[in-house]
Image (tube, rainbow, N blue to C red; front, side):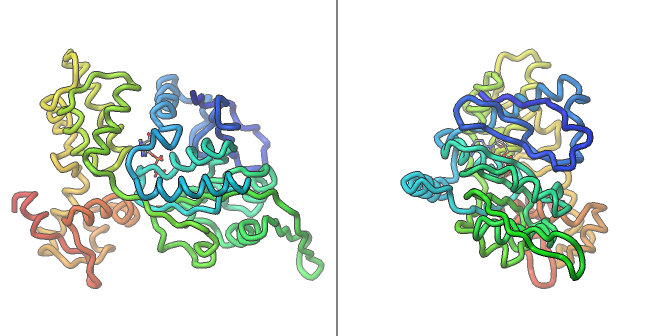
Length: 366
Ligand code: ADP
């Protein structure tokens, strides 16, 4: 079982705080899941928050058989794993893309477990300075997986250091400055880079081209999300009826992270109501209270659609005007709200801007 380490980083460490994960797959500890320097020092976290994180680690599937849905992706990766193991090579570099919460990080950890290797987890904002990536690459051992989240946000210099590392397992370091500067090449052990992004189009093409496999994660079907909810309910543990699980799944926007989050909130509601199990009615009542509607749209999704319909005559409206009217960040609209609204056909992207569809108007009672 995975344990999250709460060891603080050394105060004078120059290196980014890489997270060593899953030493040799079987029983070893999993450490801090994301190396975001903006995260609070875990030592300062209240006990309840640490408990939640440990619970997160328990809920996260550990092996490919536990990873529900994404049949095509699993099929492709099963072949890659078998082929790489047959050759005793590391996996090819892999780029996973899709909206947040669909299981990109989880898949990277599972691949490390299946290959019996370590996984170092970091994200592009933690690799701002070239020495950050150099520090990480120097620590890599043969066969390791390096997972970089939000890889579209890498700085140019970091990206350029990655090119020879990915292609020839070589680190080119510049020593000195100006005319006396020299490039020294250091050999690296063979490793696998797994990049994750919500915006594959924002990746530079030289970086994209260096991935042997590029795979999209899809929104989950209702039955898959229902299975995920039953699995999580078993781990928490909490009693839930099949209809209750389906009600939560229906409102989870095709996303496991949201499904698990909603389940926890519904559990709290059921507990306060002193009910023995989560039923369809209790799930619906709890989620109404949280303003999550029967299709999973929350306050922000509905406000976005309402603004397009009421202020811009259902569109088309440019993203910037929409963000200004909504008082939201463009990225949140693009990466969090839009993918699902596009998927269910409530929003259209046209060359002249965003349009709210007839289905969206109907759903909101216009
Ligand atoms: P991403 O990296 O794409 O943002 P994560 O891998 O962090 O998403 O997944 C979010 C959570 O959803 C995980 O903690 C895990 O519990 C759950 N999850 C994701 N994919 C699956 C899956 N295929 N089966 C079961 N649970 C999943």
